[in-house]
Amino acid sequence: MKNKSVVILSGAGISAESGLGTFRDSDGLWEQYDLNEVATIDGWHRNPALVLDFYDQRREQVLRAQPNTAHLALKELERLYDVTIITQNIDDLHERAGSSKIIHLHGEILKGRSVKTDRELYPVKTSIKLGDLAPDGHQLRPHVVWFGEEVPKMVEAENVVRKADILIVVGTSLNVYPAAGLRYAVKNHATCYLVDPNEMNITDQHFYHYQGNACAMIPLLVEELLAK
Image 1 (cartoon, rainbow, N blue to C red):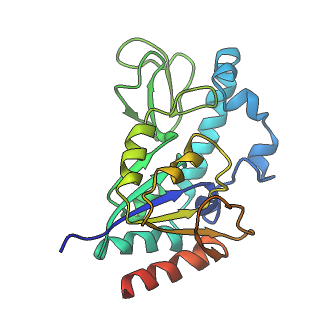
Image 2: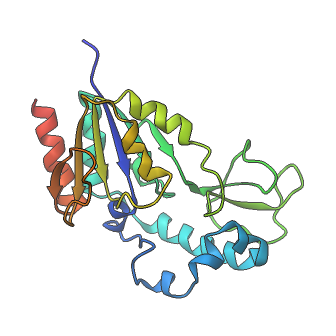
């Protein structure tokens, strides 16, 4: 019998428990920068050196971080389910936890690309500086989707969600579009779960709410799904 399809929509909250700050956190790195200056396409055009420095620091944080129990539990679902992770995160913690099918909606911090095209990607383990060029002769930039840019993986993600038998939303407030709109692509008979420590703010769809943080609730939910 074909395994049921499980789609995970993950956001910054799952990586926060590995020590990676979110936009809304008041950790040291975010306090030093204006979001409009380092996470928008206009900010890049105004001061690319500042943006590169910011993402160099984020890259260092990602390389120090480790997958947590939530990341590792999601990998375990692959024993009985066809699992795809659609993540808004730019870190590689899902990959390092062993998950095999991952769609990065907002890019990947450990990759770079030419400012002219996103067709070719290059591994970046240390830093990108002004004057570092892609093979096409243009400036390298982080392979990150900034505010003000299109999200090129949205169509692929929507197609995956449409086929899901189970949707699990974890670590995201579902307030940032277009990613938040993916939940509307799910088919009517799919089973939907929301893992979040806050009160559920979704009133337009039915979700089973596992109220708590990802590291506590995801292993519990995975254990229940594997037992079915």
